[in-house]
Image 1 (cartoon, rainbow, N blue to C red):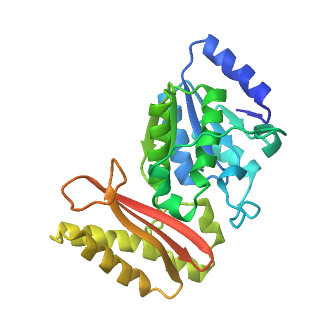
Image 2 (image 1 turned 45 degrees about the vertical axis):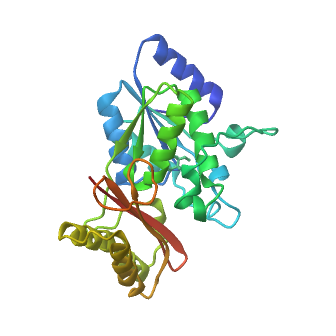
Image 3 (image 1 turned 135 degrees about the vertical axis):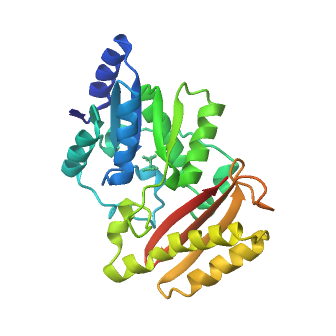
Length: 280
Ligand code: PAF
């Protein structure tokens, strides 16, 4: 497995692969890899001749008050995990390499970026779509792999790929959870032991909602209210949002007749976590 840090090294390798008609899978990450990322890399390695893993803590998707500087980083361990999962190449550029002096172009999806995460993080998705566009151009992937954990990110990137005719297939992989239900996330490392226990409230609330719906609760507002009450019983938790939306449009669901996504963002003390459940 090769590790490159510059655009020109990356492009040379991609050109060689393309000359040899090799299919390319891209797993875009911000590093600090865990089993969630590894599941994407493994899937890509199964489905493509070559797999590129990008490791880049993308400054444009963080607001000034967010955790850009404290975001966990461990390139050496990331390279080991990526290689064990079947990666062919790591692209780990610096911020200057991705955004050199004079950089002044952004890719923006409108509409669905105003909802959910976009409400609390208004500049976030513009940063995501800009960096992902750059990575698509640089790596020319046949397929790109994203986790269902970031459900809105998947919807936004799929919209961009469709609108801007990127010749790439988006493959969405299931959420990977700890044995006790906590969704894997690089940000889980911020949690103290007590907070880690409190963070279980996210997956437990989603299970509660699933149970309520399965046992006949048909009122969306009633499900949201019971989820709210459940989270409010956890003293370390503060709700950012709980929403039940149409899985396709991300508009508020009025009933459970169509596939819905139940999404939540909750702060456990200072750590903001997200989780979701797709009900089809
Ligand atoms: O999901 C992430 O880790 C990031 O948003 C991504 C897609 C790597 C873009 O920086």
